[in-house]
Length: 73
Image 1 (cartoon, rainbow, N blue to C red):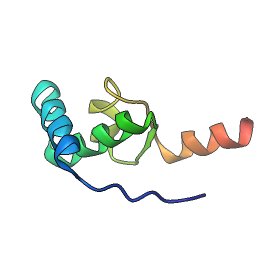
Image 2 (cartoon, one colour; image 1 turned 45 degrees about the vertical axis):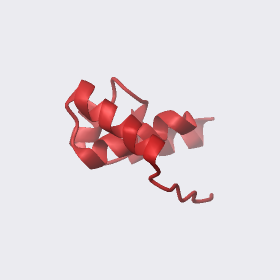
Image 3 (cartoon, rainbow, N blue to C red; image 1 turned 60 degrees about the vertical axis):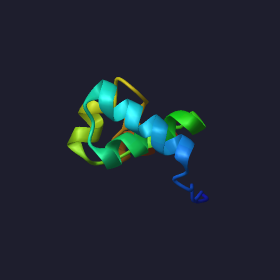
């Protein structure tokens, strides 16, 4: 397992702002979605709003579902 720290630069902020505007997302939620989109990643979150509102933008999994995918692969 590893962690990547990603700087919130102007391009990412612009992408997040556009996602916030078009999908009616809160600021931080839009940033999470923009980072996941940029990296082609699945967002793993327990936040009910992430699971419901971001699923139309990026793949979102509850941690238990993500773990199930790791153990069955």
